[in-house]
Length: 367
Image (cartoon, rainbow, N blue to C red):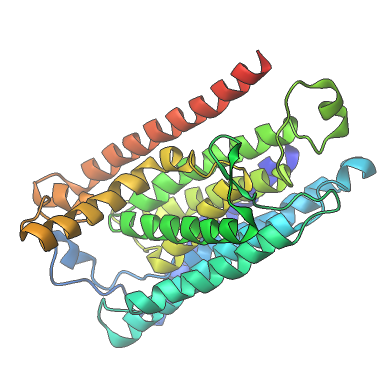
């Protein structure tokens, strides 16, 4: 627990005091966010606000992960052996950094061209596909000494569903789908000051709790596994908890500067990075289907876009004034702050339901 707290605290401090530096650097580089002409008129006032702020909390998370492992050196030697840097960390931090890199390229093109077009949709999806595919192979084909892999060959809900075995190749495809879906879901949620950041904090905090709970009831812990009726078949759950807590702490520090009126935007750098990490956490904790509930706000906003596209292409009519959903409410007259706070409440309810289902399953098995 000490390492998880240290990682979260270090990430928060680095992000809180490092983000102003990022603001100055990106302002000096004239890396201002281009604003689409089509959309709520209030957004035009945000033109020129520096973007690419995701760099700050990604950097903070990686440094905090190192700090968390330094804290682990105070553990007894037999426990340290269980929590050395692992393939799990490589996959999760790799998703965070490299999905963020795809977003950074998109942000860079927008800034360079001074318009909101950025990287083409195909180019962005190709980048996500390459990152998800490469790290998906690592997650499925590189086992630990006990044979456990980062991701599972089964579709999972709160744990692996035994009769839904899709094999290694199928699981890699599922891995890629989850990463691409979640990264685009967070990206669609980004668009109002602090909205995606606050929602991500809630989801990452939930995965920090899940990871730590799995660590305390882990099949890899021989002492626990011999005496318990049930344990979690996962790999490196403490690593999961540490990374999730570090990312949540980094986002809290970033939110100080990103909340309305935002002094910096996370950009696609942060949105794609956060989505990739959250998708990876879902796969690593064997909660793939549960992530639909935990990340419910991202799913709702993504579905609003899907519904809008299908409706317009089939009937020529729009269901919403504008999609994603948050812009519908802007055009309906809601203030930006009201939308953000109310959407955070929705995100919190989804997280609470997800955690409740996770814990109730444990009680049912143990009972």
